[in-house]
Image 1 (cartoon, one colour):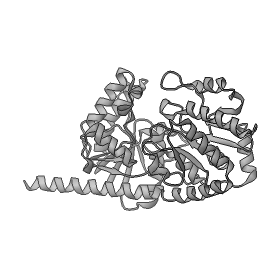
Image 2 (cartoon, helix red, strand yellow; image 1 turned 120 degrees about the vertical axis):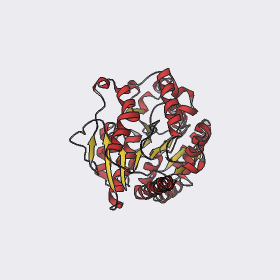
Image 3 (tube, helix red, strand yellow; image 1 turned 180 degrees about the vertical axis):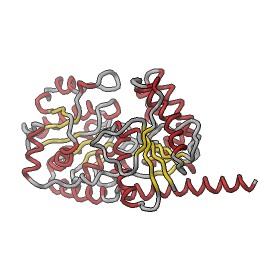
Image 4 (cartoon, helix red, strand yellow; image 1 turned 90 degrees about the vertical axis):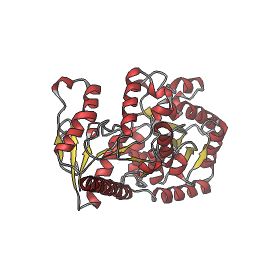
Length: 392
Protein backbone atom coordinates (compact mmCIF):
# COMPACT_ATOMS: atom_id res chain seq x y z
CA UNK A 1 0.00 0.00 0.00
CA UNK A 2 0.93 3.61 -0.45
CA UNK A 3 -0.58 5.60 2.40
CA UNK A 4 -1.04 9.36 2.40
CA UNK A 5 -1.28 11.30 5.66
CA UNK A 6 -2.70 14.80 6.03
CA UNK A 7 0.23 16.31 7.97
CA UNK A 8 -1.23 19.79 8.53
CA UNK A 9 -0.75 19.47 12.28
CA UNK A 10 3.01 19.58 11.99
CA UNK A 11 2.21 23.32 12.12
CA UNK A 12 0.60 22.82 15.57
CA UNK A 13 2.80 20.20 17.27
CA UNK A 14 1.77 21.03 20.85
CA UNK A 15 -1.95 20.39 20.24
CA UNK A 16 -3.65 17.09 20.97
CA UNK A 17 -4.01 16.35 17.26
CA UNK A 18 -0.38 17.30 16.68
CA UNK A 19 0.81 14.97 19.43
CA UNK A 20 -1.41 12.16 18.16
CA UNK A 21 -0.05 12.47 14.63
CA UNK A 22 3.57 12.72 15.73
CA UNK A 23 3.45 9.67 18.03
CA UNK A 24 1.45 7.61 15.56
CA UNK A 25 3.85 8.30 12.68
CA UNK A 26 6.88 7.48 14.82
CA UNK A 27 5.35 4.17 15.88
CA UNK A 28 4.28 3.28 12.32
CA UNK A 29 7.84 3.91 11.15
CA UNK A 30 9.09 1.42 13.72
CA UNK A 31 6.62 -1.39 13.06
CA UNK A 32 5.73 -1.13 9.35
CA UNK A 33 8.49 -1.87 6.86
CA UNK A 34 6.23 -3.14 4.08
CA UNK A 35 4.15 -0.12 3.06
CA UNK A 36 5.06 3.28 1.67
CA UNK A 37 3.97 6.50 3.36
CA UNK A 38 3.88 10.08 2.16
CA UNK A 39 3.13 13.04 4.40
CA UNK A 40 1.30 15.90 2.74
CA UNK A 41 1.15 19.48 4.00
CA UNK A 42 0.51 23.01 2.76
CA UNK A 43 3.75 24.55 4.06
CA UNK A 44 7.43 23.58 4.32
CA UNK A 45 8.43 22.14 7.67
CA UNK A 46 10.60 23.98 10.15
CA UNK A 47 14.20 22.80 10.16
CA UNK A 48 13.78 21.36 13.66
CA UNK A 49 11.00 19.04 12.47
CA UNK A 50 12.21 15.62 11.31
CA UNK A 51 9.26 13.56 10.07
CA UNK A 52 9.40 9.78 10.03
CA UNK A 53 8.39 9.59 6.35
CA UNK A 54 8.88 11.64 3.16
CA UNK A 55 7.08 14.98 3.27
CA UNK A 56 5.62 16.73 0.25
CA UNK A 57 4.47 20.34 0.13
CA UNK A 58 1.33 21.25 -1.79
CA UNK A 59 0.72 24.99 -1.24
CA UNK A 60 -2.81 26.32 -1.26
CA UNK A 61 -3.59 28.96 -3.94
CA UNK A 62 -2.03 32.34 -3.29
CA UNK A 63 -5.32 34.13 -2.65
CA UNK A 64 -5.72 32.14 0.58
CA UNK A 65 -2.35 33.11 2.02
CA UNK A 66 -2.29 35.03 5.31
CA UNK A 67 -5.89 34.06 6.00
CA UNK A 68 -5.29 31.18 8.39
CA UNK A 69 -8.81 29.77 8.70
CA UNK A 70 -9.52 30.01 4.98
CA UNK A 71 -6.12 28.50 4.14
CA UNK A 72 -6.80 25.59 6.50
CA UNK A 73 -10.26 24.98 5.04
CA UNK A 74 -8.97 25.12 1.47
CA UNK A 75 -6.21 22.64 2.28
CA UNK A 76 -8.59 20.22 3.98
CA UNK A 77 -11.27 20.25 1.32
CA UNK A 78 -9.42 20.80 -1.97
CA UNK A 79 -5.64 21.06 -2.00
CA UNK A 80 -4.93 18.21 0.43
CA UNK A 81 -7.20 15.63 -1.26
CA UNK A 82 -5.81 16.71 -4.67
CA UNK A 83 -2.26 16.25 -3.36
CA UNK A 84 -3.13 12.74 -2.18
CA UNK A 85 -4.51 11.82 -5.57
CA UNK A 86 -1.49 13.28 -7.38
CA UNK A 87 0.81 11.30 -5.09
CA UNK A 88 -0.93 8.11 -6.18
CA UNK A 89 -1.82 6.94 -2.69
CA UNK A 90 -4.12 3.99 -2.12
CA UNK A 91 -5.75 5.63 0.88
CA UNK A 92 -5.65 8.98 2.66
CA UNK A 93 -5.65 9.34 6.46
CA UNK A 94 -6.84 12.62 7.97
CA UNK A 95 -5.76 12.34 11.64
CA UNK A 96 -8.23 14.94 12.94
CA UNK A 97 -11.89 15.86 12.40
CA UNK A 98 -11.67 17.42 8.92
CA UNK A 99 -12.39 14.86 6.19
CA UNK A 100 -12.96 16.11 2.65
CA UNK A 101 -16.60 16.45 1.65
CA UNK A 102 -15.81 14.99 -1.78
CA UNK A 103 -13.00 12.49 -1.23
CA UNK A 104 -10.95 11.57 -4.29
CA UNK A 105 -9.30 8.61 -2.55
CA UNK A 106 -10.52 6.07 0.04
CA UNK A 107 -10.35 8.15 3.21
CA UNK A 108 -9.90 7.40 6.90
CA UNK A 109 -10.56 10.14 9.43
CA UNK A 110 -9.67 10.15 13.12
CA UNK A 111 -12.38 11.90 15.11
CA UNK A 112 -11.00 12.47 18.59
CA UNK A 113 -14.31 13.77 19.89
CA UNK A 114 -17.44 15.64 18.86
CA UNK A 115 -17.39 18.05 21.80
CA UNK A 116 -18.58 21.07 19.76
CA UNK A 117 -21.67 19.06 18.83
CA UNK A 118 -22.34 17.97 22.41
CA UNK A 119 -21.48 21.16 24.33
CA UNK A 120 -23.05 24.29 22.77
CA UNK A 121 -20.54 26.63 24.43
CA UNK A 122 -17.84 25.11 22.22
CA UNK A 123 -19.70 25.97 19.03
CA UNK A 124 -20.10 29.69 19.55
CA UNK A 125 -20.05 31.81 16.41
CA UNK A 126 -21.45 31.33 12.94
CA UNK A 127 -18.09 30.35 11.44
CA UNK A 128 -17.59 27.50 13.90
CA UNK A 129 -21.14 26.28 13.36
CA UNK A 130 -20.74 26.36 9.59
CA UNK A 131 -17.43 24.50 9.80
CA UNK A 132 -18.90 21.83 12.06
CA UNK A 133 -21.82 21.33 9.66
CA UNK A 134 -19.37 20.85 6.80
CA UNK A 135 -17.08 18.33 8.51
CA UNK A 136 -20.03 16.50 10.05
CA UNK A 137 -21.51 15.95 6.61
CA UNK A 138 -18.10 15.05 5.21
CA UNK A 139 -17.65 12.35 7.86
CA UNK A 140 -20.46 10.41 6.18
CA UNK A 141 -18.34 10.18 3.04
CA UNK A 142 -15.26 8.78 4.77
CA UNK A 143 -14.56 5.12 4.16
CA UNK A 144 -13.74 4.46 7.82
CA UNK A 145 -13.60 6.42 11.07
CA UNK A 146 -11.11 5.91 13.86
CA UNK A 147 -11.91 7.25 17.30
CA UNK A 148 -10.11 7.07 20.61
CA UNK A 149 -12.58 5.68 23.15
CA UNK A 150 -15.80 3.72 23.36
CA UNK A 151 -17.48 6.82 24.74
CA UNK A 152 -16.35 8.90 21.76
CA UNK A 153 -17.60 6.14 19.44
CA UNK A 154 -21.08 6.33 20.96
CA UNK A 155 -20.99 10.13 20.73
CA UNK A 156 -20.19 9.87 17.02
CA UNK A 157 -23.07 7.44 16.50
CA UNK A 158 -25.47 9.69 18.38
CA UNK A 159 -24.34 13.07 17.04
CA UNK A 160 -23.41 12.18 13.45
CA UNK A 161 -25.73 9.21 12.87
CA UNK A 162 -22.88 7.18 11.40
CA UNK A 163 -23.32 3.39 11.50
CA UNK A 164 -21.28 1.65 14.18
CA UNK A 165 -19.74 -0.78 11.69
CA UNK A 166 -17.81 2.10 10.09
CA UNK A 167 -16.14 3.15 13.35
CA UNK A 168 -13.06 1.59 14.94
CA UNK A 169 -11.91 2.40 18.49
CA UNK A 170 -8.14 2.68 18.87
CA UNK A 171 -6.83 4.03 22.17
CA UNK A 172 -4.02 6.55 22.44
CA UNK A 173 -1.06 6.16 24.79
CA UNK A 174 1.38 8.20 26.82
CA UNK A 175 4.71 8.88 25.16
CA UNK A 176 7.74 6.81 26.11
CA UNK A 177 9.18 9.82 27.93
CA UNK A 178 6.50 9.47 30.61
CA UNK A 179 8.05 7.15 33.16
CA UNK A 180 8.90 7.56 36.84
CA UNK A 181 11.61 10.13 37.50
CA UNK A 182 13.42 9.20 40.73
CA UNK A 183 16.62 11.23 40.62
CA UNK A 184 16.39 13.73 43.51
CA UNK A 185 18.41 16.39 41.70
CA UNK A 186 16.19 16.24 38.61
CA UNK A 187 13.04 16.46 40.71
CA UNK A 188 14.41 19.35 42.76
CA UNK A 189 15.48 21.26 39.66
CA UNK A 190 12.02 20.91 38.12
CA UNK A 191 10.36 22.09 41.33
CA UNK A 192 12.68 25.07 41.53
CA UNK A 193 11.85 26.17 37.98
CA UNK A 194 8.18 26.47 38.93
CA UNK A 195 8.49 27.76 42.48
CA UNK A 196 7.34 24.52 44.08
CA UNK A 197 8.09 22.95 47.42
CA UNK A 198 8.25 19.22 48.04
CA UNK A 199 4.51 18.74 48.51
CA UNK A 200 2.19 19.76 45.70
CA UNK A 201 -0.92 18.66 43.83
CA UNK A 202 -0.69 18.86 40.05
CA UNK A 203 -3.26 19.57 37.34
CA UNK A 204 -2.53 19.64 33.60
CA UNK A 205 -5.12 19.54 30.86
CA UNK A 206 -6.40 22.97 29.81
CA UNK A 207 -8.36 25.81 31.36
CA UNK A 208 -11.52 25.75 29.26
CA UNK A 209 -14.94 25.38 30.82
CA UNK A 210 -15.30 21.60 30.65
CA UNK A 211 -12.01 21.12 32.52
CA UNK A 212 -13.70 22.26 35.75
CA UNK A 213 -10.62 24.00 37.17
CA UNK A 214 -12.53 26.46 39.44
CA UNK A 215 -14.04 23.40 41.15
CA UNK A 216 -10.54 22.03 41.71
CA UNK A 217 -9.52 25.36 43.26
CA UNK A 218 -12.50 25.21 45.62
CA UNK A 219 -11.66 21.62 46.55
CA UNK A 220 -8.03 22.54 47.19
CA UNK A 221 -9.08 25.38 49.50
CA UNK A 222 -11.24 23.04 51.56
CA UNK A 223 -8.47 20.43 51.62
CA UNK A 224 -5.90 23.01 52.70
CA UNK A 225 -7.97 24.04 55.68
CA UNK A 226 -8.56 20.41 56.69
CA UNK A 227 -4.97 19.20 56.40
CA UNK A 228 -3.34 22.25 57.93
CA UNK A 229 -0.07 21.94 55.99
CA UNK A 230 1.06 25.48 55.10
CA UNK A 231 3.55 24.11 52.55
CA UNK A 232 0.93 22.32 50.43
CA UNK A 233 0.61 23.86 46.95
CA UNK A 234 -1.50 23.41 43.83
CA UNK A 235 0.22 23.64 40.44
CA UNK A 236 -2.20 24.44 37.61
CA UNK A 237 -0.65 24.13 34.16
CA UNK A 238 -1.56 27.07 31.95
CA UNK A 239 -1.73 30.85 31.85
CA UNK A 240 -5.22 32.28 32.55
CA UNK A 241 -4.18 35.59 31.00
CA UNK A 242 -3.94 34.10 27.51
CA UNK A 243 -7.66 33.35 27.11
CA UNK A 244 -10.86 34.86 28.43
CA UNK A 245 -14.63 34.79 28.09
CA UNK A 246 -17.29 32.24 29.08
CA UNK A 247 -15.32 29.39 27.50
CA UNK A 248 -12.32 30.08 29.74
CA UNK A 249 -13.47 30.85 33.29
CA UNK A 250 -10.61 32.41 35.26
CA UNK A 251 -9.95 30.36 38.43
CA UNK A 252 -7.93 33.14 40.11
CA UNK A 253 -10.90 35.13 41.49
CA UNK A 254 -12.19 31.91 43.06
CA UNK A 255 -8.79 31.34 44.66
CA UNK A 256 -8.61 34.95 45.86
CA UNK A 257 -12.05 34.75 47.44
CA UNK A 258 -10.94 31.66 49.36
CA UNK A 259 -7.61 33.10 50.45
CA UNK A 260 -5.63 30.67 48.32
CA UNK A 261 -3.82 33.02 45.96
CA UNK A 262 -0.43 32.37 47.54
CA UNK A 263 -0.79 28.58 47.47
CA UNK A 264 -1.72 28.16 43.80
CA UNK A 265 0.76 28.47 40.95
CA UNK A 266 -0.37 28.96 37.35
CA UNK A 267 2.41 28.28 34.87
CA UNK A 268 2.86 27.05 31.33
CA UNK A 269 4.73 23.74 31.60
CA UNK A 270 7.61 22.97 29.25
CA UNK A 271 7.36 19.54 27.61
CA UNK A 272 10.71 18.41 28.98
CA UNK A 273 9.61 19.19 32.56
CA UNK A 274 6.36 17.24 32.51
CA UNK A 275 7.69 13.77 33.50
CA UNK A 276 9.53 15.21 36.50
CA UNK A 277 6.57 17.33 37.61
CA UNK A 278 4.21 14.35 37.33
CA UNK A 279 6.67 12.14 39.21
CA UNK A 280 7.29 14.66 41.97
CA UNK A 281 3.63 15.42 42.63
CA UNK A 282 1.98 14.01 45.73
CA UNK A 283 -1.20 13.70 43.67
CA UNK A 284 -2.53 14.41 40.19
CA UNK A 285 -6.16 15.59 40.04
CA UNK A 286 -8.23 15.66 36.85
CA UNK A 287 -11.80 16.93 37.47
CA UNK A 288 -12.87 17.21 33.81
CA UNK A 289 -16.54 17.10 32.89
CA UNK A 290 -16.01 15.82 29.34
CA UNK A 291 -13.15 14.08 27.51
CA UNK A 292 -12.75 12.22 24.26
CA UNK A 293 -9.93 10.23 25.86
CA UNK A 294 -8.08 11.94 28.71
CA UNK A 295 -4.39 11.68 28.01
CA UNK A 296 -2.94 13.58 30.96
CA UNK A 297 -4.23 11.17 33.65
CA UNK A 298 -2.57 8.39 31.64
CA UNK A 299 0.67 10.36 31.49
CA UNK A 300 0.51 10.84 35.26
CA UNK A 301 -0.10 7.13 35.82
CA UNK A 302 2.81 6.29 33.51
CA UNK A 303 4.99 8.24 35.93
CA UNK A 304 3.59 6.30 38.88
CA UNK A 305 1.66 9.26 40.24
CA UNK A 306 -1.50 8.67 42.33
CA UNK A 307 -4.54 10.00 40.45
CA UNK A 308 -7.92 11.34 41.52
CA UNK A 309 -10.05 11.53 38.40
CA UNK A 310 -13.51 12.44 37.22
CA UNK A 311 -15.82 9.50 36.54
CA UNK A 312 -17.35 11.15 33.46
CA UNK A 313 -17.39 10.25 29.75
CA UNK A 314 -14.29 8.35 28.54
CA UNK A 315 -12.19 8.71 31.68
CA UNK A 316 -13.21 5.41 33.37
CA UNK A 317 -11.94 3.60 30.24
CA UNK A 318 -8.54 5.21 30.64
CA UNK A 319 -7.91 5.04 34.39
CA UNK A 320 -9.74 1.79 35.11
CA UNK A 321 -9.35 0.74 38.75
CA UNK A 322 -6.00 2.50 39.07
CA UNK A 323 -7.36 5.87 40.16
CA UNK A 324 -9.85 7.14 42.70
CA UNK A 325 -12.81 8.13 40.54
CA UNK A 326 -15.19 10.80 41.78
CA UNK A 327 -18.20 12.79 40.60
CA UNK A 328 -16.57 16.07 39.53
CA UNK A 329 -19.63 18.03 40.65
CA UNK A 330 -19.37 16.62 44.20
CA UNK A 331 -17.02 18.97 46.01
CA UNK A 332 -16.95 16.94 49.22
CA UNK A 333 -16.12 13.74 47.34
CA UNK A 334 -13.19 15.45 45.60
CA UNK A 335 -11.88 16.84 48.89
CA UNK A 336 -12.22 13.48 50.67
CA UNK A 337 -10.44 11.61 47.87
CA UNK A 338 -7.56 14.08 47.84
CA UNK A 339 -7.24 13.91 51.61
CA UNK A 340 -7.18 10.12 51.61
CA UNK A 341 -4.31 10.01 49.13
CA UNK A 342 -2.29 12.65 50.95
CA UNK A 343 -2.73 11.14 54.41
CA UNK A 344 -2.65 7.38 53.83
CA UNK A 345 0.76 6.09 52.81
CA UNK A 346 -0.46 2.57 52.10
CA UNK A 347 -3.16 3.84 49.74
CA UNK A 348 -0.69 6.11 47.99
CA UNK A 349 1.73 3.22 47.47
CA UNK A 350 -1.06 1.01 46.14
CA UNK A 351 -2.23 3.69 43.71
CA UNK A 352 1.31 4.17 42.40
CA UNK A 353 1.60 0.45 41.70
CA UNK A 354 -1.81 0.20 40.04
CA UNK A 355 -1.14 3.32 37.99
CA UNK A 356 1.96 1.79 36.42
CA UNK A 357 0.11 -1.46 35.69
CA UNK A 358 -2.83 0.36 34.07
CA UNK A 359 -0.62 2.63 31.98
CA UNK A 360 1.33 -0.37 30.69
CA UNK A 361 -1.81 -1.56 28.89
CA UNK A 362 -1.53 1.38 26.48
CA UNK A 363 1.29 1.85 23.97
CA UNK A 364 1.84 3.72 20.72
CA UNK A 365 3.06 0.50 19.10
CA UNK A 366 -0.32 -1.04 19.87
CA UNK A 367 -2.04 2.07 18.53
CA UNK A 368 0.05 1.84 15.35
CA UNK A 369 -0.64 -1.88 14.85
CA UNK A 370 -4.38 -1.36 15.19
CA UNK A 371 -4.27 1.67 12.87
CA UNK A 372 -2.35 -0.35 10.29
CA UNK A 373 -5.06 -3.01 10.51
CA UNK A 374 -7.63 -0.34 9.60
CA UNK A 375 -5.48 0.75 6.66
CA UNK A 376 -5.38 -2.85 5.44
CA UNK A 377 -9.12 -3.25 5.92
CA UNK A 378 -9.87 -0.10 3.92
CA UNK A 379 -7.38 -1.08 1.21
CA UNK A 380 -8.91 -4.54 0.83
CA UNK A 381 -12.39 -3.05 0.76
CA UNK A 382 -11.44 -0.50 -1.91
CA UNK A 383 -9.66 -3.02 -4.15
CA UNK A 384 -12.58 -5.42 -3.88
CA UNK A 385 -14.96 -2.62 -4.88
CA UNK A 386 -12.84 -1.71 -7.90
CA UNK A 387 -12.61 -5.33 -9.01
CA UNK A 388 -16.37 -5.76 -8.70
CA UNK A 389 -17.04 -2.60 -10.70
CA UNK A 390 -14.69 -3.73 -13.47
CA UNK A 391 -16.46 -7.08 -13.75
CA UNK A 392 -19.76 -5.27 -14.21
